Image (tube, rainbow, N blue to C red; front, side, top):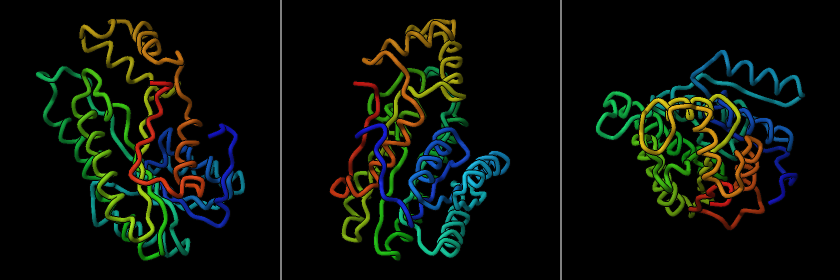
Length: 267
């Protein structure tokens, strides 16, 4: 897949949860550049408005909805409204998530563990179910669930996040089998170290603060330790994640379902 590859999304509509976040924003711009109508969902209305305005300034059609993915009724209502406003949803990027706390297993806060599971597992399920019903009624389509390399090779000090992303990969594999008869493809994307940006900075700072044997107490040293664990010795770019989503949604991937695209710089 070329970094400059373009796909035929003209006349198509993609719905993106977590649309105000870094990955959601990058993916929205990628699909808009390829001619898609973009529907953005997020719980943060201020950031959602900012992302939508940037897309509108570029001439792209965009619709926004405030949505808490942990609320199943709200998810259903938003999907119905989005389908009515756009005519049809063709693709769903199930991207909303929460990274959670960084702590050793014996010290991990119970309340935060529950919050991670509520958003990253239960919330993903709510969106996956609504997406399945909407795409089924529309005659098919494609879903990409946001997983993580943490769901392939559990990192230290991220117990809840790793558990949630292993679950997302499992849901993807089962949903792919269940939804194939309806012409709906379901795949997952598992980025590793992506940056620079808020999430990258947060991760290095919190890992440094845990005091584990795996990382230094200086976030700058942690940055280098993490980058040195990647064969290509660099961070992945937000645009590269968006490219992965675009490929999995495209006709070029029309025979791919139940697949987890592990974007890890060579691991």
